[in-house]
Length: 189
Image 1 (cartoon, one colour):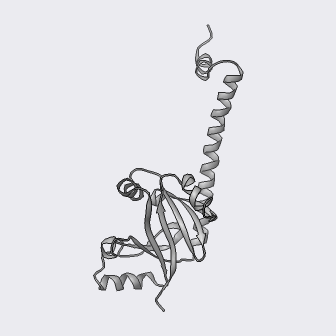
Image 2 (cartoon, rainbow, N blue to C red):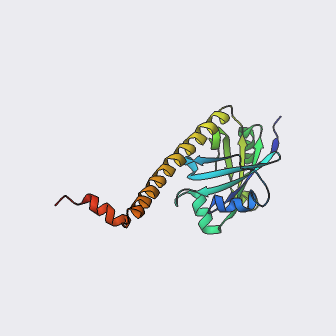
Image 3 (cartoon, rainbow, N blue to C red):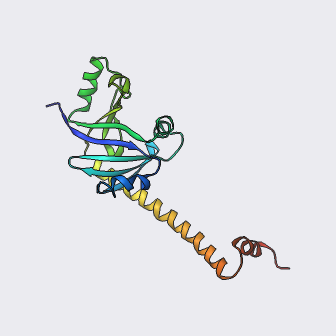
């Protein structure tokens, strides 16, 4: 049977996920289950389940992405609503037959391996709508993306710690960090 199963998520574009969590996590008490880097969408997404749905906080990771352009034009706020459907191809054909303007006329693979398609706000009375169909690959892709983000965070934190340690050592030695660096670089005289 072809039907809309549920509202899967509401995506909210934010400038800073940690700042937005001040309301969504700390204020409302929603739990962050994971944060995922989504390279093909040039964004990072924090997932906060609530009942059978999720709130997704979406932060662009580049200024060229569609999410970044949305943020520049409209500011932070609701980006789209997503419905889980049992047969995405059926819905796309049905909507085409009704003359609905589609952004994706065929399913594409989205976050975590879901088959997705977006419907243009022009045909939905101003709301960007995403339809998605679950695939078998979704759990494996989610795990791989979580590992990638984790590896990147660990690497960046190690670089930051090295910089902090260098700064603290320079203070301990009584030299400004720049003076110590140039003393090391100068040839012995």
